[in-house]
Length: 200
Ligand code: OGA
Ligand code: MN
Image 1 (cartoon, protein in one colour):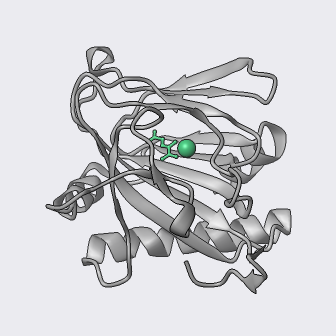
Image 2 (cartoon, rainbow, N blue to C red; image 1 turned 90 degrees about the vertical axis):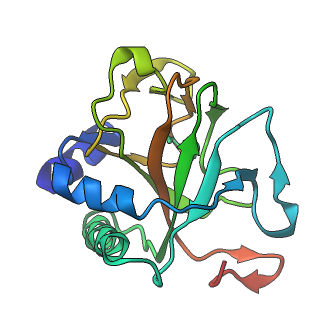
């Protein structure tokens, strides 16, 4: 956790290998849902299907899911408290979804805090892909706000990526094999449409 906080301070992102053990990852994989929905861009009524921008499918996490998911959410809660303690971000809640990329799927370069979603402050992406190899592709390429390429992250099993949502455009390169992740966002409360945005 200290390394994560240090890295967020100095560079704004951190790649945490073996965040979960292979056994824990296997248990989380058991929780992958049978049903997926087409990913959307934006929130609420403004959400649009945008296959040209992203072609993955998602399934939102919630507290009624099985124990491994709850345990993952608990770990994210620890991370939330720790981030608040060090960065005074006032992170308030966490939203996350499983994502499934099939062969050829991608997500074009984007910022996670887009219009209508400015209250996303800290992004997490956790990877569930056993024995990933270079041939599988589907890496995450990360840039700075001047569009300089910073790093490319392989979606390896057990790896957690954390970065400040407003500072790093990123893209999922087309994958050659099925690719699973849990993307999540710590949010602050924001006023939207003249109402306090507490619930989703
Ligand atoms: C996202 C995203 C990255 C990944 O869902 O916003 O950028 O590697 N996902 O799955
Ligand atoms: Mn993203």
